[in-house]
Length: 276
Image (cartoon, rainbow, N blue to C red; front, side, top):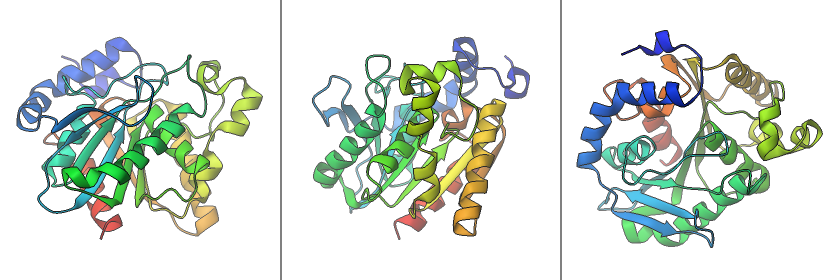
Protein backbone atom coordinates (compact mmCIF):
# COMPACT_ATOMS: atom_id res chain seq x y z
CA UNK A 1 0.00 0.00 0.00
CA UNK A 2 1.49 3.34 -1.07
CA UNK A 3 2.04 6.13 1.42
CA UNK A 4 0.68 9.61 0.74
CA UNK A 5 4.20 10.83 0.02
CA UNK A 6 4.60 8.07 -2.58
CA UNK A 7 1.24 8.95 -4.11
CA UNK A 8 2.40 12.56 -4.45
CA UNK A 9 0.27 15.40 -5.81
CA UNK A 10 -1.70 13.44 -8.41
CA UNK A 11 -5.49 13.56 -8.58
CA UNK A 12 -7.94 11.02 -9.98
CA UNK A 13 -10.07 7.99 -9.10
CA UNK A 14 -7.11 5.68 -8.52
CA UNK A 15 -5.49 8.14 -6.14
CA UNK A 16 -8.79 8.65 -4.33
CA UNK A 17 -9.17 4.89 -3.87
CA UNK A 18 -5.60 4.58 -2.60
CA UNK A 19 -6.23 7.29 -0.02
CA UNK A 20 -9.48 5.70 1.10
CA UNK A 21 -7.63 2.45 1.70
CA UNK A 22 -5.20 4.20 4.04
CA UNK A 23 -7.99 5.34 6.39
CA UNK A 24 -10.70 2.73 5.87
CA UNK A 25 -10.08 0.75 9.06
CA UNK A 26 -10.10 3.76 11.39
CA UNK A 27 -13.03 5.45 9.68
CA UNK A 28 -15.10 2.28 9.53
CA UNK A 29 -14.66 1.95 13.29
CA UNK A 30 -15.81 5.56 13.76
CA UNK A 31 -18.80 4.92 11.49
CA UNK A 32 -19.82 1.97 13.68
CA UNK A 33 -19.98 4.30 16.68
CA UNK A 34 -21.73 7.26 15.05
CA UNK A 35 -24.55 6.40 12.69
CA UNK A 36 -26.68 9.28 11.38
CA UNK A 37 -29.42 10.33 13.76
CA UNK A 38 -31.36 11.67 10.77
CA UNK A 39 -30.78 10.89 7.09
CA UNK A 40 -31.85 12.53 3.85
CA UNK A 41 -33.43 15.56 5.45
CA UNK A 42 -34.77 17.70 2.56
CA UNK A 43 -33.50 21.28 2.71
CA UNK A 44 -34.78 22.24 -0.75
CA UNK A 45 -36.81 20.99 -3.74
CA UNK A 46 -34.09 19.20 -5.73
CA UNK A 47 -33.33 15.50 -5.26
CA UNK A 48 -29.79 16.50 -4.26
CA UNK A 49 -31.07 18.86 -1.56
CA UNK A 50 -30.53 16.39 1.25
CA UNK A 51 -28.43 16.37 4.41
CA UNK A 52 -27.61 13.92 7.21
CA UNK A 53 -27.20 14.72 10.89
CA UNK A 54 -24.80 13.13 13.38
CA UNK A 55 -24.80 13.35 17.16
CA UNK A 56 -27.46 13.98 19.76
CA UNK A 57 -26.26 16.77 22.05
CA UNK A 58 -28.19 17.04 25.32
CA UNK A 59 -27.94 20.84 25.31
CA UNK A 60 -27.78 23.25 22.36
CA UNK A 61 -24.40 22.62 20.74
CA UNK A 62 -22.45 24.21 17.90
CA UNK A 63 -23.34 22.89 14.44
CA UNK A 64 -20.66 21.88 11.95
CA UNK A 65 -21.96 21.75 8.37
CA UNK A 66 -19.62 19.85 6.05
CA UNK A 67 -19.63 20.39 2.27
CA UNK A 68 -17.86 17.62 0.32
CA UNK A 69 -15.58 17.96 -2.68
CA UNK A 70 -15.71 16.31 -6.08
CA UNK A 71 -14.62 18.73 -8.77
CA UNK A 72 -18.14 20.22 -8.96
CA UNK A 73 -19.29 17.05 -10.77
CA UNK A 74 -19.38 14.15 -8.31
CA UNK A 75 -19.61 13.34 -4.59
CA UNK A 76 -22.09 12.22 -1.99
CA UNK A 77 -22.68 12.83 1.70
CA UNK A 78 -22.23 9.07 2.21
CA UNK A 79 -24.79 8.07 4.80
CA UNK A 80 -23.92 4.44 3.99
CA UNK A 81 -20.16 4.93 3.84
CA UNK A 82 -17.45 6.89 5.56
CA UNK A 83 -15.39 9.13 3.20
CA UNK A 84 -17.60 12.24 3.36
CA UNK A 85 -19.66 11.29 6.40
CA UNK A 86 -16.44 11.14 8.42
CA UNK A 87 -16.46 14.85 9.22
CA UNK A 88 -20.04 14.64 10.50
CA UNK A 89 -19.13 11.69 12.69
CA UNK A 90 -16.05 13.47 13.97
CA UNK A 91 -18.21 16.50 14.83
CA UNK A 92 -20.55 14.25 16.82
CA UNK A 93 -17.52 12.79 18.61
CA UNK A 94 -16.56 16.32 19.69
CA UNK A 95 -20.00 16.99 21.13
CA UNK A 96 -21.15 19.13 18.18
CA UNK A 97 -24.10 18.47 15.92
CA UNK A 98 -22.61 17.32 12.62
CA UNK A 99 -24.40 17.96 9.34
CA UNK A 100 -23.21 16.64 5.97
CA UNK A 101 -24.93 17.90 2.83
CA UNK A 102 -25.32 17.00 -0.81
CA UNK A 103 -25.60 19.76 -3.39
CA UNK A 104 -26.50 20.04 -7.06
CA UNK A 105 -23.78 18.99 -9.46
CA UNK A 106 -22.34 20.30 -12.73
CA UNK A 107 -22.77 20.25 -15.65
CA UNK A 108 -26.53 20.32 -15.09
CA UNK A 109 -26.11 22.97 -12.39
CA UNK A 110 -23.51 25.69 -12.78
CA UNK A 111 -22.39 28.74 -10.81
CA UNK A 112 -23.73 29.83 -8.34
CA UNK A 113 -25.74 26.67 -7.60
CA UNK A 114 -23.31 25.29 -5.00
CA UNK A 115 -23.26 28.51 -3.00
CA UNK A 116 -27.04 28.75 -3.18
CA UNK A 117 -27.32 25.22 -1.83
CA UNK A 118 -25.01 25.95 1.11
CA UNK A 119 -27.19 28.93 2.01
CA UNK A 120 -30.34 26.82 1.72
CA UNK A 121 -28.83 24.20 4.03
CA UNK A 122 -27.88 26.92 6.53
CA UNK A 123 -31.44 28.25 6.44
CA UNK A 124 -32.78 24.73 7.05
CA UNK A 125 -30.45 24.22 10.00
CA UNK A 126 -31.46 27.55 11.49
CA UNK A 127 -35.10 26.48 11.32
CA UNK A 128 -34.76 22.81 12.32
CA UNK A 129 -31.46 21.99 14.05
CA UNK A 130 -32.78 22.78 17.52
CA UNK A 131 -34.96 19.67 17.23
CA UNK A 132 -31.75 17.61 17.10
CA UNK A 133 -29.78 19.39 19.84
CA UNK A 134 -28.06 21.99 17.67
CA UNK A 135 -27.83 25.69 18.38
CA UNK A 136 -29.01 27.49 15.21
CA UNK A 137 -27.13 30.59 16.29
CA UNK A 138 -23.78 28.75 16.30
CA UNK A 139 -23.15 27.29 12.85
CA UNK A 140 -19.65 26.81 11.40
CA UNK A 141 -19.19 25.83 7.75
CA UNK A 142 -16.48 23.39 6.68
CA UNK A 143 -15.81 22.77 2.99
CA UNK A 144 -13.13 20.82 1.16
CA UNK A 145 -12.05 21.31 -2.47
CA UNK A 146 -15.22 22.16 -4.47
CA UNK A 147 -17.03 22.28 -1.14
CA UNK A 148 -14.69 25.03 0.03
CA UNK A 149 -15.51 26.92 -3.17
CA UNK A 150 -19.22 26.58 -2.44
CA UNK A 151 -18.75 27.88 1.11
CA UNK A 152 -16.80 30.84 -0.28
CA UNK A 153 -19.53 31.42 -2.87
CA UNK A 154 -22.11 31.47 -0.09
CA UNK A 155 -20.18 34.41 1.39
CA UNK A 156 -20.20 36.02 -2.04
CA UNK A 157 -23.98 35.66 -2.41
CA UNK A 158 -24.86 36.57 1.17
CA UNK A 159 -22.03 38.47 2.89
CA UNK A 160 -24.05 38.67 6.10
CA UNK A 161 -24.86 34.95 6.26
CA UNK A 162 -25.63 34.10 9.87
CA UNK A 163 -22.81 31.67 10.61
CA UNK A 164 -19.99 31.99 13.14
CA UNK A 165 -17.06 31.03 10.93
CA UNK A 166 -15.83 29.13 7.86
CA UNK A 167 -13.20 26.42 7.42
CA UNK A 168 -11.83 26.22 3.87
CA UNK A 169 -9.74 23.15 3.01
CA UNK A 170 -7.85 23.12 -0.30
CA UNK A 171 -10.20 25.30 -2.33
CA UNK A 172 -9.91 27.29 -5.56
CA UNK A 173 -11.03 30.88 -5.08
CA UNK A 174 -9.52 32.68 -8.08
CA UNK A 175 -5.91 33.43 -7.10
CA UNK A 176 -4.29 30.87 -9.41
CA UNK A 177 -4.54 30.42 -13.15
CA UNK A 178 -7.83 29.49 -14.83
CA UNK A 179 -7.94 25.95 -16.24
CA UNK A 180 -10.25 24.62 -18.93
CA UNK A 181 -11.81 22.14 -16.51
CA UNK A 182 -13.16 25.09 -14.50
CA UNK A 183 -15.54 25.86 -17.36
CA UNK A 184 -17.89 23.03 -16.38
CA UNK A 185 -18.98 25.13 -13.40
CA UNK A 186 -17.92 28.74 -14.06
CA UNK A 187 -18.07 29.07 -17.84
CA UNK A 188 -15.27 30.57 -19.89
CA UNK A 189 -12.26 32.41 -18.49
CA UNK A 190 -13.93 35.84 -18.65
CA UNK A 191 -16.97 34.63 -16.74
CA UNK A 192 -14.84 32.75 -14.24
CA UNK A 193 -12.82 35.87 -13.42
CA UNK A 194 -16.06 37.59 -12.40
CA UNK A 195 -17.62 34.62 -10.63
CA UNK A 196 -14.79 33.13 -8.59
CA UNK A 197 -15.24 34.16 -4.94
CA UNK A 198 -11.74 35.42 -4.09
CA UNK A 199 -12.91 38.93 -3.22
CA UNK A 200 -15.70 37.72 -0.94
CA UNK A 201 -13.51 35.32 1.01
CA UNK A 202 -10.73 37.88 1.32
CA UNK A 203 -13.07 40.67 2.44
CA UNK A 204 -15.31 38.84 4.90
CA UNK A 205 -15.09 39.75 8.56
CA UNK A 206 -16.20 36.29 9.58
CA UNK A 207 -13.50 34.19 11.26
CA UNK A 208 -11.72 32.05 8.67
CA UNK A 209 -9.64 28.89 8.95
CA UNK A 210 -7.76 28.20 5.72
CA UNK A 211 -5.72 25.07 5.05
CA UNK A 212 -3.79 23.31 2.31
CA UNK A 213 -1.81 20.07 2.20
CA UNK A 214 1.88 19.38 1.66
CA UNK A 215 1.00 17.21 -1.34
CA UNK A 216 -1.80 19.36 -2.70
CA UNK A 217 -1.28 20.09 -6.41
CA UNK A 218 0.72 23.33 -6.83
CA UNK A 219 -2.35 25.19 -8.07
CA UNK A 220 -4.12 24.61 -4.76
CA UNK A 221 -1.03 25.72 -2.85
CA UNK A 222 -0.91 28.94 -4.90
CA UNK A 223 -4.56 29.53 -4.00
CA UNK A 224 -3.75 29.11 -0.30
CA UNK A 225 -0.80 31.48 -0.34
CA UNK A 226 -2.70 33.95 -2.53
CA UNK A 227 -5.59 34.08 -0.10
CA UNK A 228 -3.29 34.41 2.91
CA UNK A 229 -1.42 37.30 1.29
CA UNK A 230 -4.68 39.03 0.33
CA UNK A 231 -6.09 38.64 3.84
CA UNK A 232 -2.87 40.03 5.33
CA UNK A 233 -2.96 43.04 3.01
CA UNK A 234 -6.63 43.79 3.70
CA UNK A 235 -6.89 43.00 7.40
CA UNK A 236 -3.36 43.47 8.68
CA UNK A 237 -3.17 39.91 9.97
CA UNK A 238 -3.40 36.35 8.76
CA UNK A 239 -6.50 34.21 9.33
CA UNK A 240 -6.28 30.94 11.22
CA UNK A 241 -4.31 28.71 8.88
CA UNK A 242 -2.92 25.19 8.73
CA UNK A 243 -0.36 23.45 6.52
CA UNK A 244 -1.18 19.75 6.59
CA UNK A 245 2.23 18.12 6.40
CA UNK A 246 2.12 14.53 5.23
CA UNK A 247 -1.28 14.89 3.55
CA UNK A 248 -2.61 15.37 0.04
CA UNK A 249 -5.73 16.84 -1.53
CA UNK A 250 -7.93 13.87 -0.69
CA UNK A 251 -6.54 12.90 2.68
CA UNK A 252 -6.96 16.48 3.96
CA UNK A 253 -10.60 15.90 4.95
CA UNK A 254 -10.53 12.11 4.74
CA UNK A 255 -8.26 11.66 7.75
CA UNK A 256 -10.34 13.81 10.13
CA UNK A 257 -11.45 11.50 12.92
CA UNK A 258 -8.36 9.26 12.81
CA UNK A 259 -5.35 9.12 15.14
CA UNK A 260 -3.70 12.03 13.32
CA UNK A 261 -5.45 14.79 15.25
CA UNK A 262 -3.37 17.80 14.21
CA UNK A 263 -5.88 19.34 11.82
CA UNK A 264 -8.94 18.01 13.64
CA UNK A 265 -7.85 19.51 16.95
CA UNK A 266 -7.24 22.89 15.33
CA UNK A 267 -10.66 22.85 13.69
CA UNK A 268 -12.26 21.85 17.00
CA UNK A 269 -10.58 24.77 18.77
CA UNK A 270 -11.63 27.10 15.95
CA UNK A 271 -15.26 26.00 16.28
CA UNK A 272 -15.19 26.46 20.03
CA UNK A 273 -13.58 29.88 19.69
CA UNK A 274 -16.11 31.01 17.09
CA UNK A 275 -19.03 29.71 19.12
CA UNK A 276 -17.95 30.83 22.59
